[in-house]
Image 1 (cartoon, one colour):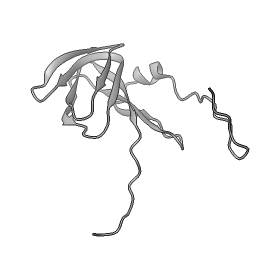
Image 2: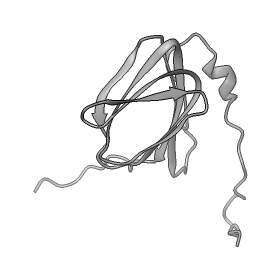
Image 3: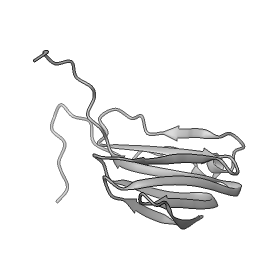
Length: 128
C-alpha cells in the first residue's frame, strides 16, 4: 500500500539524477557522480578507474554494498586471498558486510556504481 503524504509534507516523487552512460564514457577518473539529495536513506557513487588502476584490498565492516559495472572490464579480488572474479559491463555483485575486496581496472578502464545504506552522520557525544 502506498504511503499517503501528510499535509505538511511534499509528495515523494521520482527524481532523474544523471545519464550513467554519458558519465561512464567520460575520460575523467575518480568519483564521477554521487547521490547527494537530502532525506535519502541510500548512498550511491559512480566511480571510474583508469586502465590498470586499482582500489586496494579493504573490508567494509558495517554495510553491505552492491557493485554494478556500467562500462569497461576488470577484476574483483574477493576474500583475504584476493580470489580474482571477472568484472564486465552488466556484472552485478553483492559485497556482504565484513567481506574483503579489491577492484582493478582492465585495459580499457572500468566504471562502476556502488549502492549501500547511508551511514548515519557523525555526532558529538560526551566524553566518558
